[in-house]
Structures are given as C-alpha cells and as structure tokens.
Image (cartoon, rainbow, N blue to C red; front, side):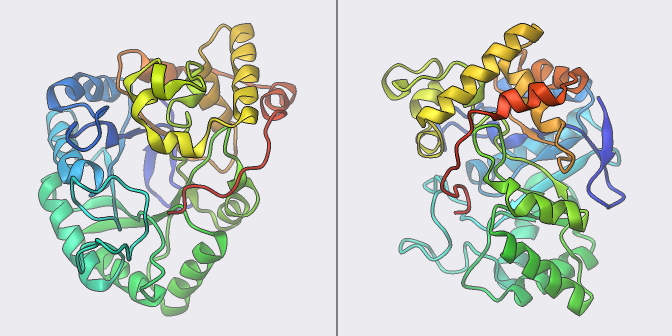
Length: 341
C-alpha cells in the first residue's frame, strides 16, 4: 500500500479508500453484505494496508456506520485510521437515494444541511460509529434550500467542537464548491479539504471544471464509483436487467441510469483489450487509470467478493504510458451531468 496526504492537509490516507456502503443490511439494497459476510473483506483490506474507510449516515439507514465502527475497533488502531462519513440524505431504510432535499415525502429536519440537521446528524453518526470524532465529515450533496453560510458555519463549529478533524464535500457544480470555499475563507471558517465526486473511465465530465478547480485549490479528490458501479469490470451487458452476471447488475437501477450507453461499452472494449495485453484484470486497469490522474488522492473502492481488494491494490504497481492512457480515453463521448442529486 502507498500513502499520501489528503490534498494540502496533513491527513495521511492510503491511496485506496474502502467504501463501506457495501456493508450493512440487505433490507436496504439486495446486494449489501451483512456483518458476517463483510467482516473477512474488511479484515483483508486492513491486512493490505487500507487505513481509509468511507461511509455515510444514509447507507443501510445507519447500519453501515455501525459496522464501520465495529470493524475498525476489531482490526485497527484508531489513531492510525481515517474514518469518513457523510450527511445530507434521510437515514431511513425506505430511502434508496436519487432525490434532493425537499422531496414531498420528506420528514422535517431529517435531511439537508441546516444547522439543526448537521448537529443532530454528527451526534447520531458518532453514536453509531462508537467513536468521539470522525476524521472527515462530508456533505453528501449541495442543499439548495439552506444558505451556504449556515452550512459552512455549522460544519466549522463541528470541527471546533472536536467532533470532526476535517470536512469534505461531494458531487455538486464547480461554482457551488467555489462559493462554499470562498464563504469559508471570508469568515475564517474551516474550508473543505476534499471533494468526493463521480469520476471514472466512462464518466469524465468532472475534468471540465471540478477537477481543475480542486487541483488549483489543493483539494484532495476521492472519486466515487471508480469502476462505474461494476460496469468497468468487463462483465456487464445491455440485458443485465434480465440476465446480469451478478445480483447487483440485475438490481442496480441507478447504474442503468448512469451508464450503459453505446459509447460506454466501447470504452470497456478498449479497457479489456489493453488489460489483456498487460495481463491484468479490467478492474485493475480502471483503477490504475484513475491513480495516474494527478488530482486523485484515493478512489473509493467497493469490495463484495474475495480477490476484488487484491485487484485494486495491484493497480498501485501498474505504470501506464501516455499512449496507453490515450487508448483508454479515445472512445469516450460526453455525458449529461450525472450524480449531483
């Protein structure tokens, strides 16, 4: 494993972060692993050198945080690891994701980024995690109904209270992120140290605005869905809803919305071709492509089966030349902006 700093901060993180959304309860999504199935995978991640664990309060309605805290206590020294969680969406098993704050069936003060919600959420997250602080507290999306001044001051107060060491953001427009950073600096509040955005070989729209902004501002990039929800593993087809290679392929409606364009399959063809030439898996090569991008601190890795963690770690030793990178990128076609809500 390799380690680096989170952007310009002093926080040391592994070059790969373990995405804890995979572990929780299958009552939330059918492909989620329960505690006993998730334990050996998290143990193996620790053995491989992962020290960065990313969860969110909404994942499995909080059960992901419960398991994250439990596994960290079992396998790690708390002072060496980085626990990241998120706030914004409702913490409810009936909530599967996909709409912004303000939906008609939303209960008052149970989502969004108002001061009351943030203070309630951080305390609830700490209780579920079984720790007195998180290392990185992230806003899961932009809240259009709450003034950004209120949000940034509340996050600053969370940091000053000792309940979080750093703060981060996730998918939003670049102008929104720039505004939040400017507001924080104007008032002497804590700025965001990281951006967790949607970025992979079949979705590269972040290269237009967000990634150049993060590079300029020294913000660490933590791409979510680096394998495009499994699409870049090379085993997806257009008939996945009926005959998917995995349970997730058959049941992940969100992936069907994000990917599965003809040009996406052409990118996968280029990926599998080069992976074969290099004698590595398509997943390893997809991770390696991301790790070659200078703005990327640590992709968020999902692992539900033995061997997937090793495939990710193998990417750290893959060296790609400019011609190989260009071959991987050539088939890409622009997408509508996806993942901000």
